[in-house]
Length: 155
Image (cartoon, rainbow, N blue to C red; front, side, top):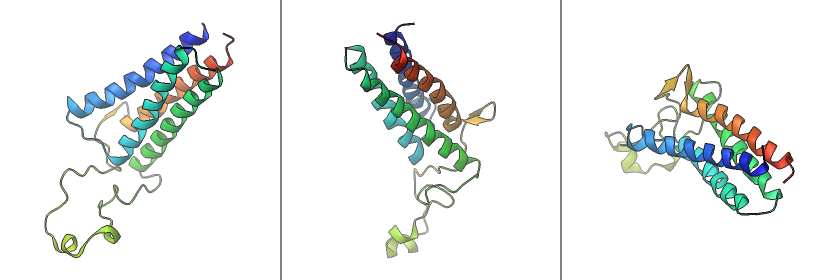
């Protein structure tokens, strides 16, 4: 395969994952948690980098695409580990979801729970034992292989 073919596949892969996330959110009704949103930004960067590379940017930029999918994949691994209770996640979106240090007196006295809060340590969807974060990590490992292949392939 040519370098541009590898870049195109990797770029379309990130676009598909990002569109899938938006589909789960807006069609499926699965609101994203804070870490889900973190995983979207590097995919966006990988898409932009891929488009720029396809229009003739320097080869070194391909490594930034690889870095972007590696980052979102690592966030996915971290997020999946939080979901499986392997390690703690951010206190603002795990456990009870209450960051007492950031709450005012009226918040502490309120009897109503925060609305719209999605916990990062809850698995809301899974397939074959992997959550969305887990699938993001697996697919990003594949996309990383395409980015690295693109970087190592002569024009």
